[in-house]
Image 1 (cartoon, rainbow, N blue to C red):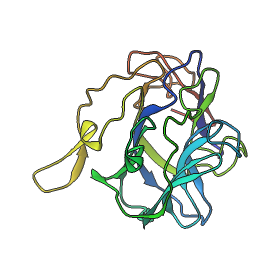
Image 2: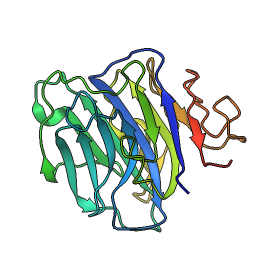
Image 3: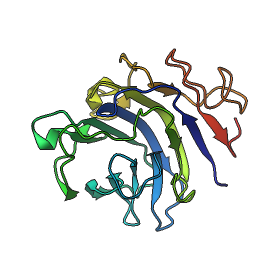
Length: 223
């Protein structure tokens, strides 16, 4: 149904340090890639594009305009399961492997099918003024729509957080959400997707409940 959410920044934030956290439950494995969080339209430079999604292999990928930073060995193919994904970026880090951190269900991923370092002090389009931030589709190609459920979307501007800031293991060793206490920064947002309506305001499904009023505009989405 070509559903997605979109927001255009009205001011600039940190293009080097940010964290994106969300829970997904896939509904359909089509064999094509999907985009969960996509910023920018340039497909040739890392300053112009950054996205989190999957390739046709169903492996989680973190990609710039010119560089594929991370592709996991693990696949996300269980349509009955919720996956918690955290991508935490800090390109100012001196240790190359710490510039892009990926967490899956509470555990930091350290083994990758593809592993390329982000250039130190790299500016991404994330949190850049006037850039569109989209949830659920390939922004440059307006394709590769995400098909499934998404919950508890957090985007943090200016801090590289770990998965433990967003979830915890219960007594049975199952990774579950917890009450989040983070500093969202200028362009940060928290989408709970539980509001009624379809407008990008405090009563809409794209409402930002972080207190920043960084609401996302839904397209082809009903509350």
